[in-house]
Length: 415
Image (cartoon, rainbow, N blue to C red; front, side):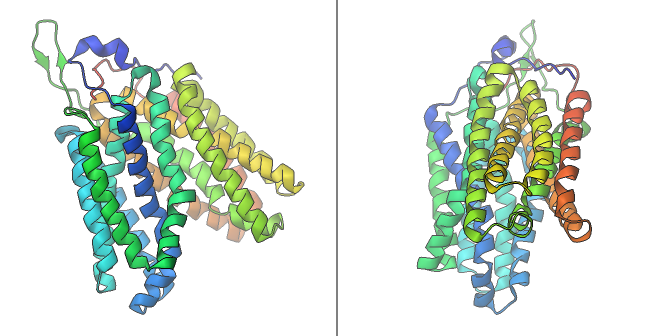
């Protein structure tokens, strides 16, 4: 299975106008921005009982606020990503953060549950404009030889929000109320909008046409929708393979392995550490060895380790904990490495491609969770990991044979 990495910006720089590059400061701002977005995504679930009591509804009804957010995100991401390709990623990012701040403030002061639902729809749409824009800016503004590392740092902000951001938001809610949590997120988003204005140089994210040899400018070649969907299908398959298992790992740890609450929490912490370390190492490995090797190796290893994990649930606890950490460590290098590859492959369409990528990650997570739940209730927990392993191997095959265009693009990578 051989796939060639596309040329980096360094090899294509002569084809167009030199673009501004980002700094460590802008990378830090991107990290915190994705940390805030991730916190908003993950903090809602533990607050649902409080929201239900506030409006006199069931927790299940309150949970529809998560559903409308996800639907709005998935529908809005591709449309706003295309807009970012035309207007510039920096512009869309800042507008998205202001809208995201407004949506969270409205969530916190919503007088009725209907108003809260409308606010969560707005939050979903604006989050869909923030996440891909940040990723595109990081990927395009990074030094070409460190693109994978920069993408990994940004992705780590999102991953860390699950273990740090969400508990912090829950702590605020326990001290004050759930309303203050969302208002606080709204204020943070407004501050981040200002920081992103200062942190990203003017011209960052602007699309610059290719210059012909005669000095005239060639109109940017836009990738077709089918090309984009083919490319991001790999992310959907990765998300299915990982989250079909992870969604129910707590159930397996308690019911199959017989672990108590303390050990279950320890196991999930080990998984979280493995995911963050794997993501960060994936970027460095991609910069050193190439994205193709990292993506394919990660997908194959996660598949192998899912089979190992299926057996480890019947092994001593220390073996199970080690296997769970290794699974996360092997699975998560794929994500930042592949995002860096997408930016390099679709330089003039990175906003829309990364938006589709986020959409397919949501889709893969949702379908994987649904299939995992169906397997859990029908065939049993032991069937979830093998199915995920097969999907992971299929993802490696799709990447190697079908996902990306065979002919490398030569347009300059816009910052």
